[in-house]
Picture: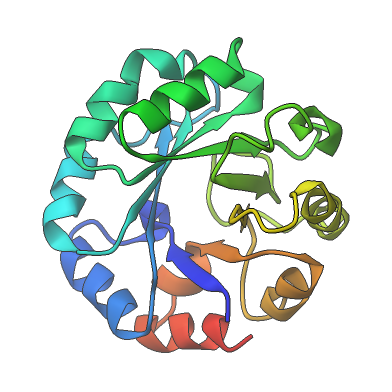
Length: 214
């Protein structure tokens, strides 16, 4: 079964704790938090304060996705706030190996994200050093976008890059729902990140279960 990581970008923030608990009840494994700065992507969302608040609401690992310029400046802040995993964009980091190593020095899982237009080959030199790889299946910045079918091919290609025996999680984010969950897992995804498909559902717990079972 895939790991399900509900993305709170799509949650109702007046009922955030309640909705997170409903996701937990449905079998959610992680909570995914999209941090956007209005520069790297055309949207502005959360900072460390929100991460710290969510940490008090759940015991699930917090998978923090930094869609920001200069993420190196903020790694310690998000670590202190309670992030368990920090993912940075290949496109936003100049010295990726240094950034990944710094995340690990902070005691966290380190991940790298690539945008839809970024080729898989850029991961070859970093794949041995990361704990997670996230394939964006929409252009980052907003929730509720249409899934890009080219993502199946990219997932399969990244799966081939992962050394046998290495416990590297392959994640997919954007347009993920019950209609494509099984196909994404078949293509190689270990972690399904879903926002609208979960938090816009009338049955949040049931939506998580449906994704989990494919």
